[in-house]
Image (cartoon, rainbow over all chains, first blue to last red; front, side, top):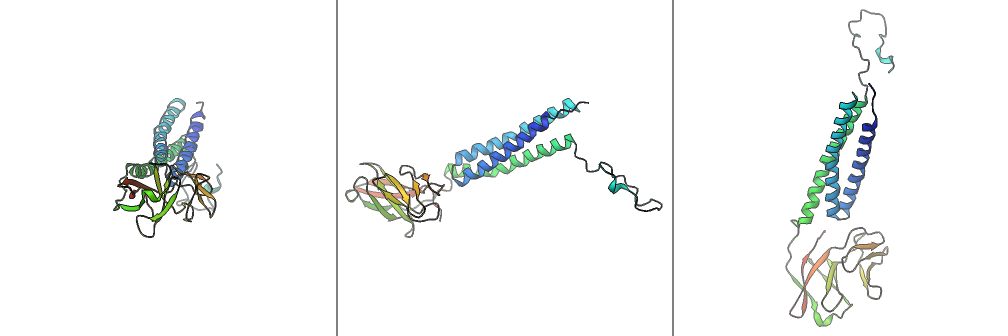
Length: 63
Length: 174
């Protein structure tokens, strides 16, 4: 059983993007740029299925 | 993982210290990935209300209605001049600027930084808050320099029968 840590790294990248988008979203809301707020929120939501797919792939192949 | 917490402290019949705690709290690769996916889910769910509130603001559901109010006669405002007035309440100071023959803009003139009054600099063509040198774009009210980061609330104006009227506020915060 050879483990791959690529999915782990990808998930960490997703988490980093989550943090970035969240902070961007909150700031853009405060600056009243509501379109940017919505875009950041949508990106944040899209990241969840991506993370889930990465997890599925990583678990099936390597364990 | 050390066996520090898994020792029988003294000799006895071992009826009470027989729980095997080895690897009880071990976080393996799979568990770590599950945690990360869970975190992504929390982020996704928590960004939903922000998107919803932003969409509500964009759709204009929270716009308020105010009775229209006369600001000034057309003749009394030359092109490039500004007039101070109050709208919608008598304590909400605002400024009307005539940019061209037909184009008027009006804003609530409390600076979005610390609410100092914002003035129209005719020769520089920009709106300046003298307190901390915040500057605003005269066409849109958007901040262009200095501490303010939010635009000035715009007042909708209408020209009727040789006079300028304020008819609404784009966004108003008390």
